[in-house]
Image 1 (spheres, helix red, strand yellow):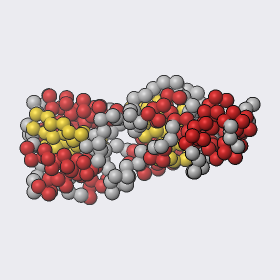
Image 2 (cartoon, rainbow, N blue to C red):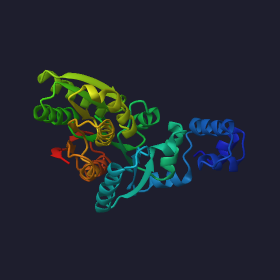
Image 3 (tube, helix red, strand yellow):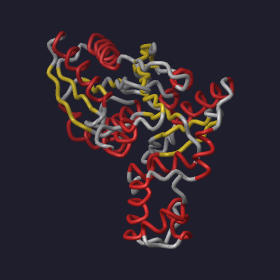
Image 4 (tube, rainbow, N blue to C red):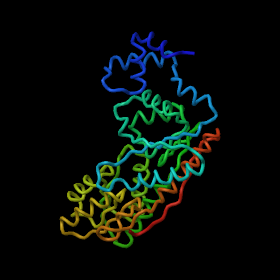
Amino acid sequence: MTSIKDVAKHAGVAISTVSKVLNNYPNISEATREKVNKAVEELNFVPNSVAAALSSKNAGRVALMIDLNVKTQAIDEMAMRYISGAITKAMELNLDVITVFVFMFQDKTTEELIRYLQSQSISGIIIYGAAEDDLVLQELIASKKFKCVCVDQNYVGDGISSVTIDHKKAQYEVAKKLIEESQAKKILYISGYEKSYVTRSRLQGIKEAALENDVELIIKDADFLEEKAEEVAMQYGRDVDAIVCASDLMALGAQSAMKELHLEKPICGFDGISLMGYVGQGIYTIGQNFSQISAIAMEELHRLMMDEKGQIIEVEYSLIRN
């Protein structure tokens, strides 16, 4: 079995240096870090603590990987509900849980992230809303080092499942409701982040609703950001009859813009966050039970950890007025 001493010799560094790299100590040069990581990979080295965890029958530690939205003051109702639902279900299943946030690993390679998770004895991961251009997360999923459940994706494979709602249908239904009630003929659609599965699905829904109702559609991206949505609405909101937003936070931004412009325009959102009930006019939105979605994801991860096949699970949603 390869030892830490073998890694140190292969990399041409001290044993203590290898230990510091494996434990993500600061003040290690990139050149040294790369040498050690290369030696670890070439020798297929697994730290003792990880080897012990992998060889035991206790494979019940899972990680929640959440992309926390730190660019809004509504920090972050969806994430907190996800965490609550997952932890509650994990306790029922006798699973241990850690929570990590995507921004913590922005400067890490896939190999470094995998080693970190292995050092924490992680057997399975729930990943919430991984963007397609987040190569580290995409490579983490593809590595199959861990059982994975992806929330708001359509991945399925060996050891990989997804839990989602029908975003296309949901966007179609809420947009159609707004169009029918407002009799709008020209709509501004404020879209989300273009590299996400939910954005593409919701775009299909709004296009279908506009086509069926003979509505002119202006589509602008705002990356799911409240402030950017406000800027888009300020620029294009005057010349439309209604505004459809691909998230409630962007609907808040659109409402702020209309207030500043002294205009009243019908607006709808997507997500059903409770904050919408306390601000401005009531809007139509898509209600999602994020705690339930996360609990279902935890149950599915537990099933995968029993070596069951991956699948896509579609969860119910509701059209509500907040």
